[in-house]
Figure 1: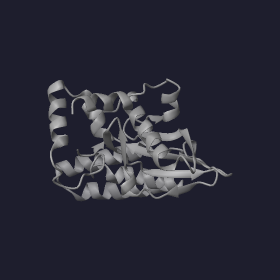
Figure 2 (figure 1 turned 180 degrees about the vertical axis):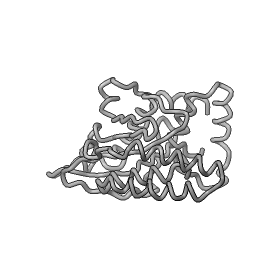
Figure 3 (figure 1 turned 60 degrees about the horizontal axis):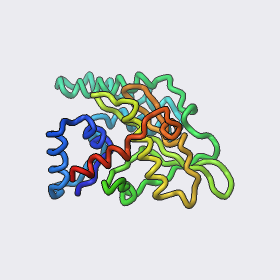
Figure 4 (figure 1 turned 60 degrees about the vertical axis):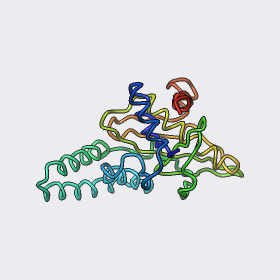
Length: 225
């Protein structure tokens, strides 16, 4: 079975029964090429800028990327390319005055590598591809805390429960790989909807503020396989 990106799992939730059957059929087909991460390259200019700005706690990175995108927008006459650039520009405008310190732990923050062989997490037998932008540790003591952040975007628009799926996927990913060394903080399993401007963390799922849908969705998919 092919690995399932989280965004594809969320799309599956919205499919008709017929499209769900087609989705499952395609999952079982042999892999023909290397799988791509959520979103492809369409949003890479804005998402990579947000990821870098978060890591460096430096909002000027967004302003620099905005200037480059504006130059590229003016330099092309291709309509589709202009639309792509404009959408990335609009996202960065939304974050121009964003205070990353509100979501970024400040105490001895260290960013970990994310080996490709750690990206697959099985839930209800479904191999999910979990690719947060950053995994980070912070704090002192024998067992520091660990968290992750994922900047996501979808033109169709994420629902609040969709973002909860992302946050729980981060928690499951961290639980699988880091629970012995670190304390996993649900509040720092964070997903940021770059287009819709919403932040969701796994603590909101744990507290029942947001529905827990990851298990239900993977179980629904498993039953069709």
